[in-house]
Length: 418
Image (cartoon, rainbow, N blue to C red; front, side, top):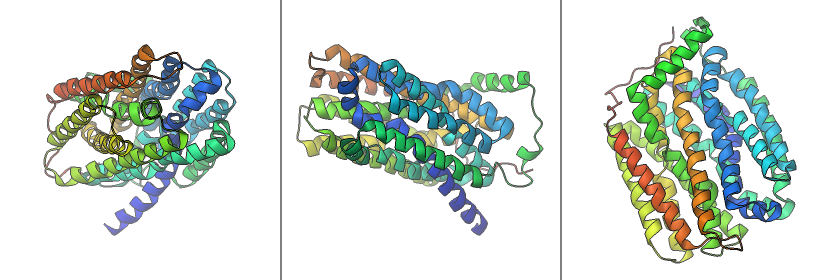
């Protein structure tokens, strides 16, 4: 136990530092979105695509990332691909139109694609399985500093130096985090099966991916994973800032402050569900409860009239907290795959997360763009449709997920080390 605690502290701290950059990028344009729209003349639909491109790049590269993780190990995969994020962030700072922003955002997404999945493979090999959800929640929570930096700090820096210089700073931080991670990250402990693995042929490698996709339990878990983070990031990561500006008339700093506390709530939700996974007997019932709570909060947000700022802030914060239950799904997904398919399995499952964000953020752009007025703002009705649409999508996903098997056993075994 003492040795595991020491390993956990070292690994989780290191992985969290690398993960900070990834989290910053995925949330960074929410608070500055109106500024970018004004400067570059972006439409709501274009903003939705720019925001979602990061996540579609993530989704596209999850299967390659899984193959790289199993073949080359997480250390080389994370640090090698993160170089694309360094270049993409610099490109974003230099972009002058929609296409350049989209291309730069795609590069950033490619670079960040392996960070969380590589981290999960590492903790699966170094730390005990029964604490997997807790360890994952710690990485997600501590790495969530990047999401926090994307709120009020980004708003303040944007006011001081402009949003372009913010991305130059992010590019430098990413480069430093790569060096730090490469020096400390280890693929697996000595004697672990990873070190004795046989390099599969490309046919066998792809066959493993196809086998994962055909697995019925994987398909059911994939469905709910498609909407959990996408629902959160549609509001916290993109359209929340516009909602607070269009409906409540809040300026950049005020929007940043509310998004800051929403982001803190997202991080708190990861810790909350990571803890509950260790004490609740049924993971499936916990997922269902979290989904239903999220649906209720979305329906309330879509139903209420314009209220005071503190009231809408409280509702958005509650939604951010209770809606972030993805750690439960990744824990359930981890139980499906054997060691030789671990990287490919959780990375393929993670494809749902970022494909979902792309689809739901883009959907938000088309919904809000339909209602947009000549001055570029949108009325309350536009956001009502968005909230109700998200609630309906989560409800359908939950219905499909309800057919999955309970993944939690009385005592989950640790992964093989030889």
